[in-house]
Length: 194
Image (cartoon, rainbow, N blue to C red):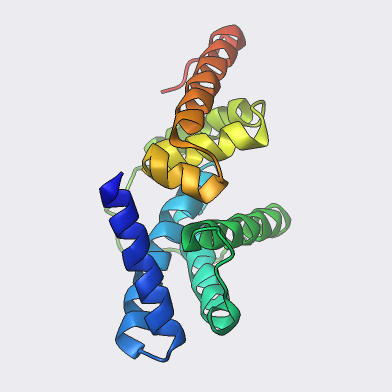
């Protein structure tokens, strides 16, 4: 718990210094925000075609929003991370809406072989992500958020609790219930996730 409190006080100090005009503190803070936003967006947008690019765009938008809001930010008993995740949630929702509306075909043919995933691997990964996304949509919004923050983003129960205004114990119980529900949904769906 001390490490989490130490991290929280360190972020609070960065926020304070950044608000006071310290350029180095602002850069360090925005780097931290970008990393958190990218992990969060990647986890939430994994089922979309071009999810890496979409996640990078969302993370950039989060950084811009945080930078604009930073001079007016006042801590009101909620950690800065919760403020950042609330922005992330809205920006990811915006990107999801945009992704549904705008599939853009291209006439360009690449000149070199892509060293990344083969089309088959990419299709399998996308299919698995879509199946998992369908199952996740059957969970409550809080369960989805907890699983995203704990499993995909990698936050501790303490960090997740601070972000969602829950105790670490409540986060662990909710995570356990969400995983059990997800397991049951998967078993009853009869489909196999790769």
